[in-house]
Image 1 (cartoon, rainbow, N blue to C red):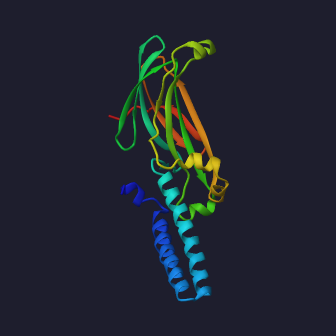
Image 2: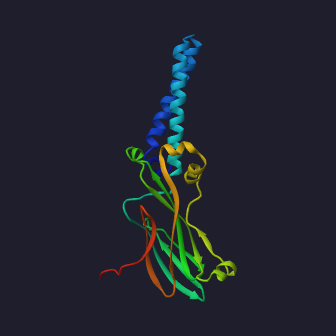
Image 3: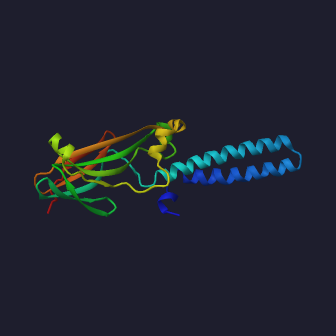
Length: 216
């Protein structure tokens, strides 16, 4: 079981509700066999409710895998760009966990977008806070004609996931009880020479800033 899943804020609720719910459900069946119908109905309904809540907590926990909690303004990645020809450049993204990815990109600008999940205030009380996941990096042309006809490059940054919480929120109304909003955010910057940037994410979305030179 991934450590990231175990540390998810709702994972303990998923386990607790699931275990108690299953126990009550089987207790209800046992009560029914002993002709205690009122007790059986209470245990079965309560058990089903807890199992449902546990399943929802588990779904959210799995869906949040890959998302990072947002605190004010975070550096999502350090980006190094190097021109490699006319309307071509390489982009190296270094992430906070130390991972690094390099992409060949076509265009005049580098474009990065992300998925952002914003929870209701009462969901914050159980440990759910605004979270984000970088989705893709691509090239963008300044000229619309080039944008329509020139080669396009798009690279995925998000992980393959069992549960797409971002997509579930768009399809299922019940998640409105916890999720205040889900939205995409994007930012871009021109690439004309070798440069280093900081890709930052805040409560208002993504932005790219030129990296400050390191002090000797």
